[in-house]
Length: 354
Image 1 (cartoon, rainbow, N blue to C red):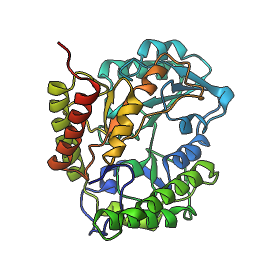
Image 2 (image 1 turned 30 degrees about the vertical axis):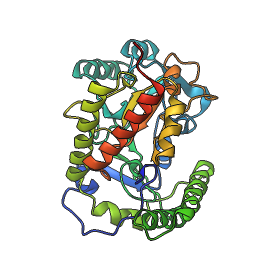
Image 3 (image 1 turned 180 degrees about the vertical axis):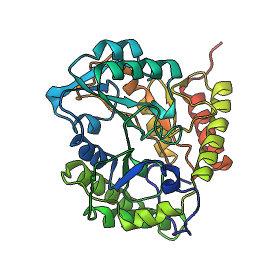
């Protein structure tokens, strides 16, 4: 059994009625190879001036903007927007406020209304990075949404830019690393189904790494591949939401009752859809290594050391955050396997003392 990490390749399904095109039907959309390509293209539409970014964000977001234009506002220790910090930063030279709702936890309506009043007064634009929150709400107040869809679905590439108008923005061609990613996903599927021996696992993991490196150095913006478009056409949003919420409920109940050494972090409410199941834990790297030994691969959102965000008040969270997998690939048995691994680790690392 393997949990987490990259998606494996799935068979094409017939198009369904509640796919991503239907979900975003109220917006003009541009499908591209990655979320960062969507953001780079959007940057050309944004007015010049000061750009306000959250102080806890993936570094790839920061690098899409001129460094001398970026200012940071603070988040709370639960990685929600510190609204006092944000409003203090807004001024006459503010051109863009960039919002990100960690793990899909949405802000209250009162704060959004106050932000709307500030926008009407100062005339700035709002960009929502919905990579964590698109299925909690495609947009709350933003002029534009930017999402990395490959974090949600079994596709080799994929991001989307959307809004009421994209002014004819376009992207074409296929990213040169996509075919390698398809091959790696196929090899992983063969491994998981027992049609590829254990010793070949390193091959697809290495190929995934090659593709990640290619994306990191890529300067061009490409359209979404036909492979990803066909897969997305058959992905049911309602089924995906149901699975993620079901798995989250199972994890939340067990962690609340059994694991005092795991601290809740941005846990979603009933009307929200999580990307992962994030927790804070002391000696995070030790737990992560233990889970890897059990073939459970957990992401960290995000490593901030060496980035401009590392001096922020929430940067300490980066050394404790661990994103446990709860996505639609898994059912109750897989979640129970993850919980049993956590139980075993807890007994060893947090032995009870009288």
